[in-house]
Amino acid sequence: MKRRSFLICALAGGVSILTSIPALSQESVSITDDRGVAVEIPGTPERIASISYFAVDVALALGIKPVATTYMVADRHPDFLLGLTTEMKQLGQRAKPNLELLSEAHPDLIVAMRRYTEGNAAQLEGIAPYVAYNMELLDKSYEDVAELATILGKPERGAELNDAFKAHVAQVTEKAPKDEQPRFVMMWGGEVPFAFHTENTTASIVSAIGGNNIAGPMQTDGKFGMELSLETMLEKDPEVIFVYDYGPDRPHESNPIWSQLSAVKNGRVHYVGDQWVEANGPIGREIVLREAAHYLYPDVFPEVDVKAEAAKIIPTELQM
Image (cartoon, rainbow, N blue to C red; front, top):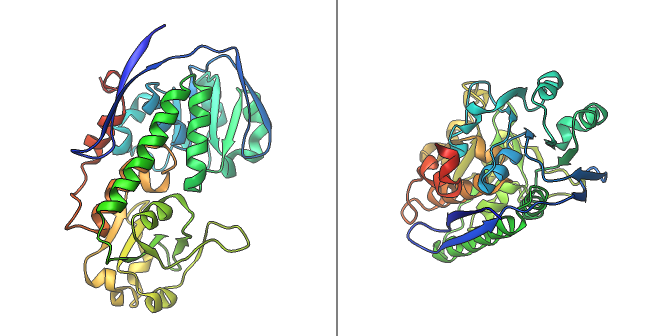
C-alpha cells in the first residue's frame, strides 16, 4: 500500500505532527448529506469537482488535486490554496456553476455548497454522485472534514487535521491576553452591512480566541447572519471589523457614520481574503485562526504569510 508523509504545524515554533497516512481503497461509502439525502459513492473518488472551495481545500490537504472548481471572483486564485486552482477546470462563479463545463470535467464526485445547488440536484446527480454541505458553522466543519476524508479514502488524515486545529485553537486561546475581549463584527459590505452570528465559522473562530461578537449568537430563526445598520453598529462600536471583500465596491464607506466607528478611526478594518468566506476546510480555517489572532492581538501574534502557512499543510508534491 502506498504511503505519503504529511506535515502539519499546529503553531509556528510549536507542536508539529508528522505521520504516515495510508491511501485506502474501498468498495463504496454511504453518507447522508445536509439535504438529508442518502448518497452512495462507489469506490474511492479520484476526479473531484468542487462547487465552492471546500472540497478543494479538503482534497489538497489530503494530497489530492481536484479536477474542477468554481471561483469566488473570476481569475482570482486564492493564496490559501497556493493558486493551485489555476490547474483546475473553472466552472464559473460558485452561485452559478456551469453544468455543461462540469459535465466536461468527467468528475466521479461532486461536492457542493447546498444553497447554490440543491435546486439542480437532479442534473448534478446525472453527472456524478453529488454531496451537498451547508458550510456555515464551525462545529459542522469538523464533521464535514472527517466525512469527506473518509469518502476520499483517508479518514486518519481527516481526524489528524481536525485534532491539530482544535489543539491550535487551544494554544492561541491560552496565549491571548486574558484582560482583552476586543469587540468585533464580521460582515459583508454594502449600504446595509450583513453581519454574521457567533456560530458562523469565522465569527466562531474569532470568538473562541477572545473576541466579542457584536452581532451575538444565532436567533431562534436559525439564520447565520442578519442585516446590521451602521447606526446600530455605531451603538455597539466594534474595535475590529472584518469585511468579506469581493472587489472595489464599498458603499458602506460612503456613509458618514462609517468614519465614526472606533475600528475605522484606529485603522483596524480588515478586508479579508477568500479563506474567510469559505473557512470550513482545514486550510481555510487554519489561516483564519492565524490571521484572527494577529488582527485581535497584533502585539502578541505575528503577521501571517498566507502562502507560507498553506504550504505547511498542502503536500509538497502537489505544489510542484
